[in-house]
Amino acid sequence: MRLLQALFFPPEQPGGVSSMIPYLQEKFSSARWEMELFSLPKRIRGKGREEVVFETFDWTRYGDSPIVQKYMQTYRDYLWWTRLRLQKPYDLIHAHHPIAALAMKTVFPDTPVLQTIHSSYERELILNGKIEENGPEHRFLTSVYRELEAKTDQLITVSDAFRRYMGTYIEYPERVKIMPNGYDERRFKPVPHENEVPQLMAVCRLVPAKGLDVLLRACARLKERNIPYVLHLIGDGPSRQDLERLAQELGVYDDTIFYGYTLHPEEFMPFFDIFVLPSRAEAFGSVFAEAALCCLALVGTSVGGVPEQIEHGVNGLLVPPDDPEALAEALEQVIGDPAYRYELARTACEKAKAQYSLNRVAIELKRMYLGYEARGSQSL
Image (tube, rainbow, N blue to C red):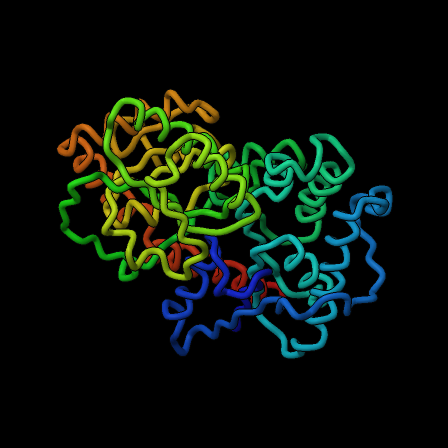
């Protein structure tokens, strides 16, 4: 069976897609399967000129927005690159970004196209202060969900929470399948260690949606209470200078290490103690599963798909978003009780191995893909 995994970013970019899809190739390396990866290189900008018409809405109503214009130009670029580079037929295409799915269905209208939606671009833009809720960009991006439903053969998402969110914008939410991301356990190697001072860490893009300002305020409360810790922030983004400035204002800059972007944070993640990320929105939160596989205690917020990974008090702690005091109390609990911290980490690791293994995802995908192959055979 000839498969194409259609990504948006190149596979080396950070995120849930890149932490799973490239590693699937090994699981599909047999005479029965032939899998390729495809993505849009960063250098391809402004090449596409093809006129675009959507089936379910008139996108030109929102065409005055620079954000919509950029989105549509990227779509044209993806179409141009796809037509240029892909000629041979595929038995099935699995897309991992709306632009990839719509472009693939345009170029290969007779090929089944499955679409996994990994995150909400519009929610991220709202939380990061780039667009307004119910503004033209928001309406445009949520209209794309209905277009995907009409054009693709199957919608998939990574959590029940995100399926419920997406359900308000599509006609048949009950048809959306849920398939959490999977991770190759061999990449994550827990290391027995004893840190005299508990080491907190977060891995994410430095943007307002991740709530790192809340984390710094919680850390300031820990410092006021003379609770020892070191905070490691791994990642980069437009909020870095603001976060560094806030850390200085709060008096926690000397206790915080800003690493910048790191390609493989899982290589040194096991040497820390507590993973904490007070996100304001998460479709799934892949990094929580990755931290769990490294046997770290988890502290997160009760948003999106995070509560589907963390059962409060069992394999981690949950706090409300935008609540520095609640976050400080949760961190104080796991910092001050190493035995409890270890038990949370052990339970989180066991759950991640059982529910988020790459083998499980590969088996589910093969079953799904073969179903489309069988339908094709019956139609001949």
